[in-house]
Image (tube, rainbow, N blue to C red):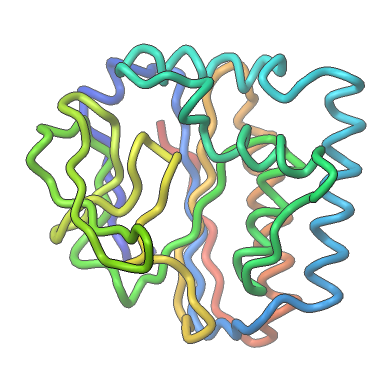
Length: 231
């Protein structure tokens, strides 16, 4: 792993059951969504339906844990859902999962199939390392609204991922900023899988292994490193 990832003591205190696992990949080939990546998303929706067995996504024990943590840092989980719950809801809806680009499709499929938040960032667009912290409220989060670039600021105490320039993802894994997202020009990426108790670490490792296998399949020759789970 060449990119450093740190979790602040404040976040560890807030969520002692938090575990994250990173995959760093170089030599990736991205592009528009394909029939193959679309099929993976459809299969992930089927796997999710089997996992839930008629329950709503927010009733799953792992999603319950995420909702409790969101509430603990002052966010309303029914309005700003963690990324896995939001994707799961879309997967089960009539419209299904969005097709973004090849790399995003791959990690979204893993997120839905395993019902755990998964994010992807362009390593070449990250300044310094990535840090999971509780925001002061002064940090910049550059996003877009109505086709225009705007700067928001997280709430004080909100859990955010940030680098040396500013916030890369608000409310833990709710909304990613466009600055570091994976585009069709991305050749180096870091994929972050996040979980809370009661999800076993072995399940996170299985999800990471599946994602690494997909990355290798769709980007033959890519250099892929799976980190160790860190809490």
